[in-house]
Length: 141
Ligand SMILES: Cc1cc2nc3c(=O)[nH]c(=O)nc-3n(C[C@H](O)[C@H](O)[C@H](O)COP(=O)(O)O)c2cc1C
Image (cartoon, rainbow, N blue to C red; front, side, top):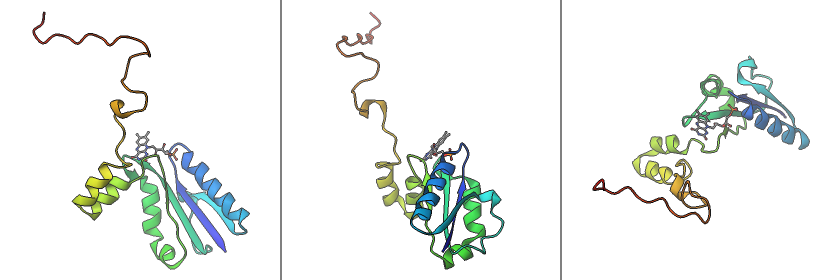
């Protein structure tokens, strides 16, 4: 089986992931190659597809989306596995498409970045053992 791992990257991380995926598939005995989506002119020779893209502002890079749209016929007919590169993923956008209830759950989950007060280590800006800064008085005194 010949597998195409096609990726869209802006800064190279997704290319690295694609190379690792292709190497793992090759180690499992498949013929796999990682290629940037813009270099793939014809998906005809492949028996399976692994398209992936970096997520920016909750969306795949446009080149990744275009690749999947352009080749949806082949991908629908063959084994296909999609991947996203990015710590947050596209959960919030996917959930919005599913409806408001799912979107609420997603916002409370992985797609919501922790604020400074919820990070491990407690409050910001105070070294261990230091006294808290006095709060400014409302009266101005
Ligand atoms: C401006 C900016 C926006 C980003 N938006 C997201 C995002 O919405 N979701 C996510 O999971 N990662 C996001 N990331 C992180 C990138 O997706 C992540 O670093 C990715 O691995 C970069 O891949 P690349 O090096 O192949 O371009 C963002 C990074 C930057 C700099």
